[in-house]
Length: 388
Ligand SMILES: [Zn+2]
Image (cartoon, rainbow, N blue to C red; front, side, top):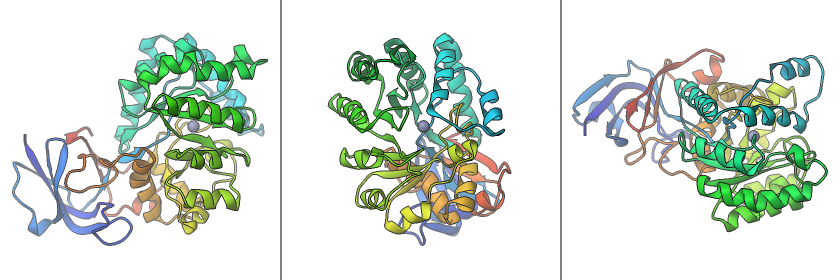
């Protein structure tokens, strides 16, 4: 293996508690990577020799972003729906069915190319780990196909047969839940790590969501929940009760919901792209952080309600609109995402961590919020390989 010394780093974000501050920053720093892992971090003046040398030229080096919530296996286009919504119409969960029809009609090759396109688009923006959900097939074959394709691109695959009730079951939602917890689960479980459900009015109620998650858990999948996005509801409490890795959205929370998250290992994953793209009120990250909850930021990249793949955009919005400090937002987009995916090898930079690194074209991670909309990717390494 060949080792590389990345030196002359202006600010190194480690997320390692042995260094100062929430981000565990080191100034005038260096990192050594060997093969796919980090082998050394510290002050540049004390760095060991390596086979190769990369001069960071005073810029900031961060862990690659961990995008723990994305819907990338889809076909079709919802530009018109977005345009109409921005012209005054309200968002409802039913728009998902438009994408379902297009996704079913697409070939395997088209869907695979689509996922590949978005994973590369994310990589160019510093995202080195991404979770990908099914949920636009809604038949046994189409959900299993989505997960097979997703698994070619990421180990973080999520079975979301319970995204909305399939159109064929519009008059028989109980029958659809039986399918999702039965034959569809049988076909999908081998290709998935996680099980998810959209617990919301117009999608699945608390009892249905419990049935979906419990069936998934019995098949060895780990739960995560689309919870409390559009209204108050049982999603967050159910996520905490079932030991879910993450409750996602968390836009409408009672004090009891906040307390439940703060007292649990369930991460509150906030998806500001969804509120941005539906012109809705943002979740209150400050309230969750002050209560002691772990917060992650993620894109929710999907064609209907959040068609952004940019974690930097989510950071900027979280700082401007959700009460997060720049450090908190960067932490949530890296270490928070890793927690939401129960990954200990990513989201931080320390010896033994996977060498997933984002070199910013800026001297400080604060620039991610300070310079919104500006492309700041100077270089990206994924598992030690220079990708950008
Ligand atoms: Zn989602």
